[in-house]
Length: 114
Length: 113
Image 1 (spheres, rainbow over the protein chains, first blue to last red):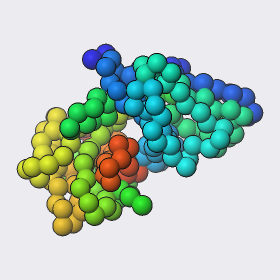
Image 2 (cartoon, one colour):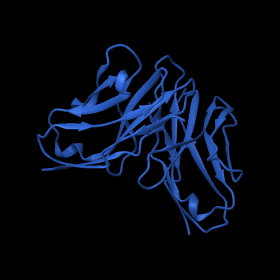
Image 3 (cartoon, rainbow over the protein chains, first blue to last red):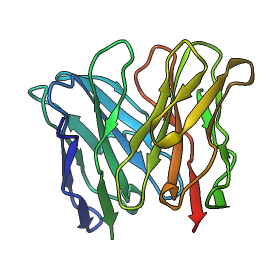
């Protein structure tokens, strides 16, 4: 396994701008997850996909956030009209559908909204 | 709602000291439990996991954890820490028929050489 990759690793943007992050899961992993981590906190679940279907969304995922996984492989997370409170590390994880399913995390995209 | 508590936010130990990090969760049903570690500048890595069976699970780098159902706990232990164990440790729970993980707030461990 080559690991979960995320791009970009860092993003600085001005308030009100739109940003998009990409996640490439481990090959053949059916499930893909997005989490957000702020300073001093553990990762918080945002949403997850099974193949191309988005099956669960957290209430943390406001209308300004949208995630897609169009072909069941990579995923994108877009934040529209960014706010300073969106500054965080955005983590992606993937897993294979097995009995003892385990999520493997990528390096994250650190977003700073000025 | 499910939650995970990690009582120690910061721990400082000398090399060769023993380590125990607490983790408690709130959920009455079947749970899957995980400990992840994040070394400085690196991404979250799985240390160990518990799904069922022997409540004492062994992970990588000499770490182990014990699931005590009656106490809703899954504490992480290591008999003798090394400077290279300096990292942030996260406990996570997966429960209730959902696939998402609920994480604790993490414990920052600093090991003095």
